[in-house]
Image (tube, rainbow, N blue to C red; front, side, top):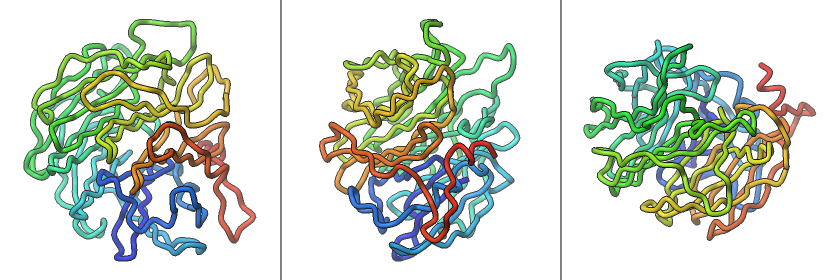
Length: 361
């Protein structure tokens, strides 16, 4: 399910399929959360894991429970991913019948364009709530999507990429951007200036010392997705590079032009979160720790982070740890994170819903 917050003009400014916000414009217009000052309990977290068939439009004022309107994803689609661009066009990709589709809306989800199938061949993985096509819209209006082949015993799964140069009317034939199969956690970002980056994790080279742990990899395009350079292991100066094997990741290009990647680590079996930081042209990342929960777990909880850029360039991350949902916000230079919220609850109710109870549904 997706959740959108409306600004004072009724515009959707972010989505919450995972527990936080997403905009490609780097703006949280009208969001009643000042970075560092939490003015309301964001009730949309409560619904994050309930289903993946709808989007929900959320409106409200600081200190008051927001109103929620549910909008059905077209075709009964699964695991939608949504971006609102600078022109207030709502872009959405989703999975249906093992294919990926694209639609857009100019009226905040009241109506959608005719669905356009993105993959002319092959299949698209959508199971387990986090997998599905992922979306990025550059400042130039080019629409970028990535996905993974539908998994089945004996089937080799790769990272696939396709783009649209005509505002979503059609998509080019997909490209395979991973040289190895068995990938998961695919995400991507694009800046509209020619830089497109895709990330995933895969057990290559093989390791079995840490269970449910795979290595971070990436592929880069410097010509707006026309071609991709050979994929490579993500180089991190202060982290070993092991990620939780099935948790989703989120990539963003910030207002400073740097690329950020939020992921759940698996180093030493500790399933805490980090945000990687680098220039868009280099494969030399610095890991910034988001939380110090030191959650030791020898399996994957399959609940990845969400990441967005605040209006002053801070990175805001939300995540689940020990079955509770948290917020964290970086400083302006994105050198450290500070935890903001330990749990989510209704202000006028004694009911506390944790991520554990929601995931159990």
